[in-house]
Amino acid sequence: MELLRAIVNCQQIVTISSNGDQFRVGPDQDRVDIIERRSDGIGGAIVFGHNGQIVAVGHDDTVLKQLNSQFNVSSFDQIDHVIDGEGCSLIPGLIDAHTHPVWAGDRVNEFDLKLRGASYLEIHQSGGGIQYTVEQTEKATEDELTQSLLERIDKVSACGTTVLECKTGYGLALNTELKMLRVIERARKQTPIELVTTFLGAHSVPKGMTPEQGVENVIDMMDQISKMDEKFSVEFIDVFCEKGVYDLKQTETILKHGLKTFSGSEIAFHGDELCDLGAGVLAGQMGARSVSHLEYANQQSVAQMAKEKVAAIMCPTTCFLLRLPVPPVRSMIQSGVPVVIASDYNPNAMCYSLPMAMNLAAIHYGMTLNECLIAVTINAAYALKRSQTHGTLEVGKRADCILLNVPDWRNLIYQFGETSPLIRCVIKSGYVVHGKV
Image (cartoon, rainbow, N blue to C red):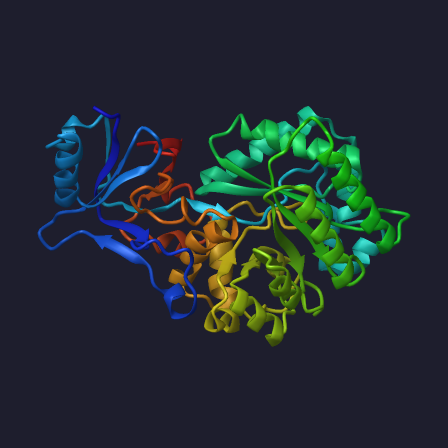
């Protein structure tokens, strides 16, 4: 018999969707599909196969009938490993679609400066911010960066994240960008958490260069990386499209070259965080998968993103910490843009907890709890090209989920702060990677 693992007798199983949705927008972003304990006391069950996929989900008795038909299993006692989910709720594993987890050197001094009135751009232009982290990351060894990344992944995973997007970008020069790519590849082999690589060689204009020279520098880096025998699984190309960094035309040039350089990659870039450049319009025109931040996005950008189904990755931690305007999230949802919430974990926004980011999005952006959950599951899966395999608890999808020590999943957002008492265990591909059963 095939090796099976199961969680049974749950108060709630939040499947998100049961009909193969790629994302949810508009009024549907405020709707999640839930299997609730029935009035006769029958709870919910989910069963995982040996290949790390979901083979059955539904009420306990319905699932047993499916198992009996498919595997000749008439009792959960016949299954290899069973977790009793009494009093618990189950949700999909969280997907963090925007993080910068590879770096050295903290920026606590800059945090103090911001509280005293210094702006992000003032710090950036004085050689702080990204430039400071670039200097520290260049000095760090590959082993040191790998160890710190693995420690951060462990913290992220403990908060329920099972898929983590990882950007380069604290190199800006070939050797350090290569070092960051190698670190992500090394970590990928040492953690069960799924890592998604984004090349962000255009995170800032290197010291001593003009933006035009910066463009040529990034293009040269990409060309050299593509010619190496060493291969990296780069899935996305990113640029910091912003006033004082790279403008729309420069961004377009870099992104187009990146698409040609990294086979199978897609566009996912920073835009309209500090001013309105019309990044959403460019994203729609280029067929981008996503744009992040968008605090200053105009209605034309929103309309273009909705038309082309470009995901809007919201970073509420950064918005809050930099005291930026609230992005037009409600307009995005109403217009049909797939809205995503990400932690934007980086030395400028030291938050690795998606539940905390969800709380900030609910309070600061006015998103509903359902909208927040959609934004870190099915919509985040869409932003990372994983709609077919992740983001919902449906048969055939990856068995990534979180078992919560509460009968109502909404407590994960409601109980703001420390999540460890709430999370009983985190499951990746059918196996517990954090917590106790």
